[in-house]
Length: 252
Image (cartoon, rainbow, N blue to C red):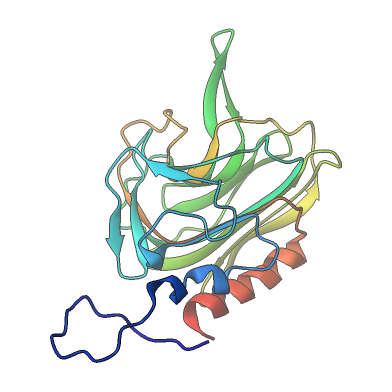
């Protein structure tokens, strides 16, 4: 296989013409993590999964592309949604790398990753699903029905963070990890759930797409990648995945 760069220009003096049927685009599929069910490397400036092409991702707003990342509005009912909910598999894992600018975001609840939602049953609000959110400059993880909400220490400035959580509904196992790309572990845990996992049935995504209980929160997050697996990962597995993700994105 020969690799070349195609430039968006025409040459009047070109002597060679390539057969377009024999040219294929080099995509980030080559960099996708092993075993992922769906994967997006956002530096490609496209929202098509590099693995499961039947898995879509959509946004209610125009996508803002930055260098090697996309900007996502964290206000209530904003964000990106995949076409997968937490019902697509009895075991699943969601991972992402995101840049958070804590000084840019309001202190309200701002969902970052997952499908945490607020639903009313008999006029009582229940928070279902799982994932990560920020509140008063801390990162929290919630896996509803399995574990209490767990906060990190106070964060400051502009930080790149690997976020991951994993669920096995049948055995009630869970794990989660939040680690900065420079190696500071913010949150980590694994165990057996206290009750039955509270399915959200809403799309897994980026931002506050499924949540409307955060008040008038405002902010942004800058995502570099998103991976979804149909398997359960232990905390040690997530730590290994963090190292691979860091290597994939930073070349280290």
